Image (cartoon, rainbow, N blue to C red; front, side):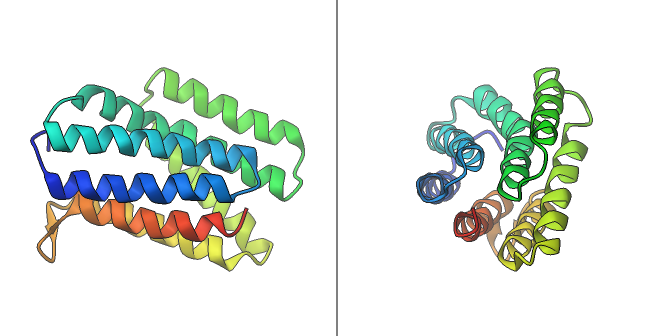
Length: 172
């Protein structure tokens, strides 16, 4: 979808607002960095869908956010639960390497990061994060569909992520 869609532009603005709000509320600098990255991608998306321009920059930043952002977020979770700092740097380095080359495994790496976040959070009794990760998974499943209940899948994706991000902001 590269044309103009004001509904999708609006849902991107909602996502940007929720992630910016989440970034301001969290204590972890790495988790905040993830939220700022998502904010930038969603603002570019808002401009893209309102004007029909910036398709390439939005796609590139979204791909970067999906992979590098996931590893940064995982790094923040690892720091929050006081794992060895080397694990934080390792995952961020892997995410950066895969993102920089737009490696075909970036989506798999992103999924691995979020599954690890879910496992770590569940083992530490953080069920709010588990719910947010489940919402991320649902949003990812809906995204390839064209529409669901009369609403574009991109819009569902943005609204579900907005809710998940607000849940996550209360955890870190």
